[in-house]
Length: 358
Image (cartoon, rainbow, N blue to C red):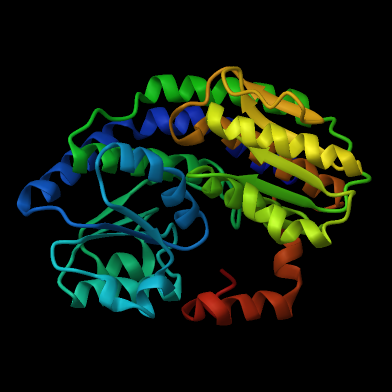
């Protein structure tokens, strides 16, 4: 029956096919980006988004830097309050699946008025953002259910940004078949290991990353916030030790996200230290970057580009926490059922959608 369908798990599982299906359009996006880069000397690349869009832009930032791009992953408020940061010759990439986030639309108007070259990455027609930015590329990833937590759309956004980086820099792009295989392998591993995870005594979750991995940490925390009820935070590994740690209950689960051997060494030391006060750690690591002293490990054979290998682990963990909290991650009806909070969320971020139920 449709009412019993596990939409979020289905969305996690279809990510390899989503990447494969995107292949022809990603070639178009890469070639279009190459055309943008050829028009004039390329300045900064402002990649502007909220929530998942910003997290994806942060997650691919290392790949962009290695490709020689001056990649600036920012929230729209960064530019709205400091517009003088924008220079002639810069390029602005606007990220929004719905295209209806108020501040992202305002930032698009700002960079448009400043004469920047604009490109919008959206899903579907792109809402208000799509109307403002004629030069747009749509992922066209159909939703499996209304109001579903962003899973396959996040993997698709990362793939789109890696194609954009390839086009702007002239460097080789993402091997979609290999990446799809990495995702499928990681999905099997995460589904098997996290399905029976005992979360009963966990008081909250802390997602920690470093470097470009901070985007993955913020994404992991956001997914838990969207489908679960217990307290969740994200932080950089070192800054956590200087701030959040001091009020953290020992019963919290600390999730350490690792994409390189250098990060693994710091995460391993943190896991060892946290064990002193009985705090459990869950490491999302890989064979060549292990976190051996973590309490629990979700180890994948290969990291993959921009941490793609860790997406299923973060998504399955959020699903498990939501179920443990007695909620339904497949529909998230608890968010809309809180009418005052849902209305306030629209006042904060999407005033144009007030009264539409969206």
